[in-house]
Length: 631
Image (cartoon, rainbow, N blue to C red; front, side, top):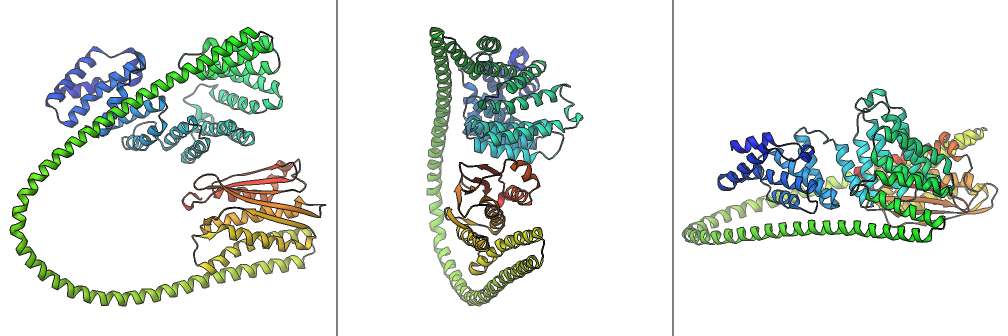
């Protein structure tokens, strides 16, 4: 055991193993393992087996990356679940989850991460904050191209950062959300989150960068501004993008961020290709290729090769272009083959490990069954001897319990009658409460209506009418509750139909022939979700009646609710009216209705977007139909 303790003291940090292992570490590690295999307990053996994992990890990283002993040994230890300490268990979980991530086994990573971070926090380990855990998961989903799930966990990471001393981390998560939107071609949403990220950096206090170089904050700004400018490249705005990317390149060099520098060179090569300045494009692409690291920047290299082939094609070098395209294709195939081979080997290792574990468990089960059979035969003799006396005792007990149960049955029946009476009283009271709430809301609505009619000020009339419509939307919820007594299952489709009909009735006096179409599945919601949903819908439809059809005699409003995933839905309200004004963004900042919708959407963990159609406009609001996630 002393050898094992000594070995643990000599164990190097993983970042230091690039230089190999010291002779003392190797000797003590081997001795500890030999001793534990012959004389040690399961816990002592697992402690010594960490030596094997350390060496296999070093061998995989720096000698032969096709060797997967580290996977096998780590998974074997986790399957056994026998460790000398929580520290050792945490170490193995960190090693294996990182290995799985590097090889693309993201679902395995997701299985290991919760316990890894739970143990890390219990041990007060650094880098185990909740936002790091959520960020790790988000990165996995991003690599899987499940951008919706990635954004979910990036937002959870943002929510878990309570202190303002992490502006760079907050900006990074917002930037990553923007990147996920950009990957989906949703440039407006991407631009919004890029600007959020930039805003965080610009307003961060200087002390937030104590651990960084003086120019690091400026570099982060350059990266984000470059991303924003690059969104507009598809519209032909090349020069602003070139200017922004060059700033990113310069600060990337200053901060020695090789990946950023390579990406900037590639972007400039592409931009000058778009501008048909092919000589400059090749110069930047060549600069990127010089810095590309094999096995690390393979994706950047593939983009570089394809871009250079396009340049050759543009300047008439057909043969060179074909060679370059072929080289790029072969390189892509080799990357895929290496990745597939590595994943196949890891999968094979895992299969063999689990197979052996199952065989061992089966052998242990059979041995246990055999021992149990022997014990059962010995116990039968004792059981038979006790059976007769037990039977007599059972008869006595049965008579006793029969009488007792009969007495309890009478008591329970009386209690049931009392409970049923109480439930009926509560049901009547519950209905009466919602009936009174509905009546009170109607009284308030009537007062607002009367106040609006008595006022000659058109603004006051408009405010009273808006308030009356909002109150009506809430009153309808309580009307449904009065009819059903189930505030956890509001029929959202029926509520939508009633609300739109009420708004249409209120706007008949405006002399327009407006038709409404509702397309949505059957959805049940809690009252705490249905109320903000109704207020959002009321605001959007009321705005349609108020502004969309000015100068028109007829029109159509289409309301669609579609599921996005298990609990997330999207509400879409479209009209075929005049469309949004050009200064909509500026006007929306002062609009009570738009700000109310945004606030309610945030409450439902969603967001508001709006845009013009070929004819008319569209408002989209995402919302989550899960009470646990609602603010």
